[in-house]
Every structure is written in structure tokens, then in C-alpha cells.
Length: 315
Image (tube, rainbow, N blue to C red; front, top):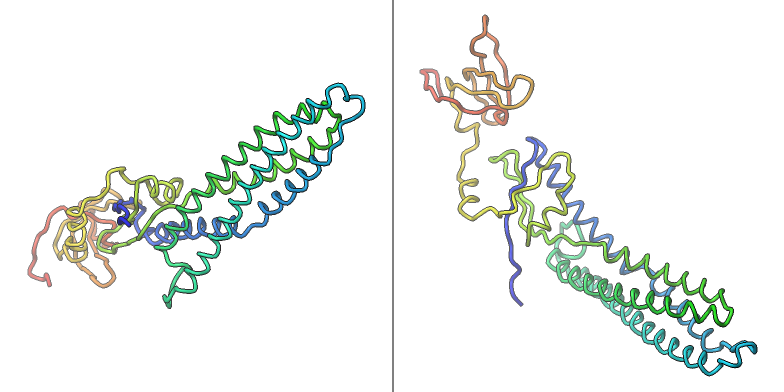
């Protein structure tokens, strides 16, 4: 089995909201997993299959009304063909149901073999990719079978009219409605193939996501109030190395340096650094062009180094 393609995308976030974005991405992934569990464990499909089986049985017991005696053979032939087609669809739906049950068994098997002491999910992440791929195939087959059933009912509608059995038309529509609702809920589920989420404190304002494609990242980021969609172009290995080699701002800024505030209500103001607290990632600056000394303590995330000026008191 070939190794899935993995790309890294840099998601731009609001500063100090990186962990919120990362947590929300994880929660979206877990939410999709829960949706798959609900569909796989649902009895809706089996209920609809049971109703369809009874419906077919009632069709087989239909008696052509006496007033239709002159076209009895034609109606019987039509009925026979409809029953054969419905039985074929019934078999297809039963096959889908069996595949869902098999998938549920695999999920339980994966969970029982999970040796992780700490995990967000009882089923390991690498197994979810297999589950999601199989689920998508089953959902697609279910959709095609339901569409075939809907098309068949369009043809059967005139037959019900010919034999004065509008009750059968209503019954068949109820079955179709149940199957369609279940099929739509299954086909809407998209599992994002995201392999890892990383927040690096030395590079604030970004969350790095390892995923199979840009579409997978888009699904979990779009609409987030603290994050913007990344560039469709993945981050290269060289660019990632620059991120890890880059020194945090707290290490770059020295006493005496000139910095500019880049975020907050004082954005654009410049000041001279009088103190650096590397543990808290804070700097104290005196605003330039001020009539009196105006010390201000601010996080290094919110300043940009303009000029480095060493002083005698620099440590």
C-alpha cells in the first residue's frame, strides 16, 4: 500500500489564538468521526429495508380489479417486472447494510487493538483514513441505489393509478423519503485527511497543518473567526526549516533596540527597549517623540524590530 501524500499548510491566525484554532480543527475532525459512527450505527437503513420487503410482498399479492380484466395480462406483466426490479434494489440495499455492519465491526476491532494510553479517540487516527475511504464508497453506492429506486417509483406510479391503489403510492413514497434522508446524511460527510496539527511558539500567528490536500484544510478552516485560509500552495521543507531555525523575538530584541508596535491601539508608535523579560516574552519600551518618559510593557508578539542598538547596560 502506497504512503498517502502529505503536505504542510501554514494557516494564518490571530496572535495568541493559535491554540484555539488548533483545538477547533481537532474538534471538527472528531465531529466528523462521530457523524460516521452515527450513520454506521443507525437502524434507519434496516428499517427502510424491512418496510421495502413488506411492500414488495404486498405487490406480489395484488389482485387485478375485475374492471381491468381486458388488460389484465398487460398489468400482470408490468407488475412482475416491477417486483423483479424492486427485489434487485432490495438486494443492493441489503448489501449496503451488510457493508455498514462490517465497517462498524472494523471500528470496534481497531479500538480493541489501540494501545495508546492517552488519545482523543479510541480508534487510532491512521485507521480512520481507511474507515473514511470505505465509508465514502459505501455512501456513494447507497446513493446510486436510492436514485434507482426513485426512478423505478416514477414508472410504478402510473401502475398504481391504473389499478386504483393510491395507498401503495403513498407507502412507496414514505420508504423513498426515509432512504433518501439517510443517503443524503451519509453522502454529506467529508472526512478531512489531516495527519498532524502543530503550533510553534517561536512563530506566533500561525498553525501548521499536515494534510493530504488543500481541500482537506479548507474544510476545517473556512468560516473560522480567528483563522484565514492558507495559500493553496503547500509550505516547502526549506520554508519549514527556516521556521524552526528562526529565533523567537524575545531572543532577538536587546536593550536599546528600536521597535515598532504592530498590533493593538498603539499600532505604529515606536519606542526604545529598556528591559527584556525573555521568560514572559515581554519588553518594556519608552515611546519615542513623547514629551515625557512613557514606559510601556508589551508582549514581543506585538512589536517589530526596527533597529538594534547595543548599550552598555545590555545583558
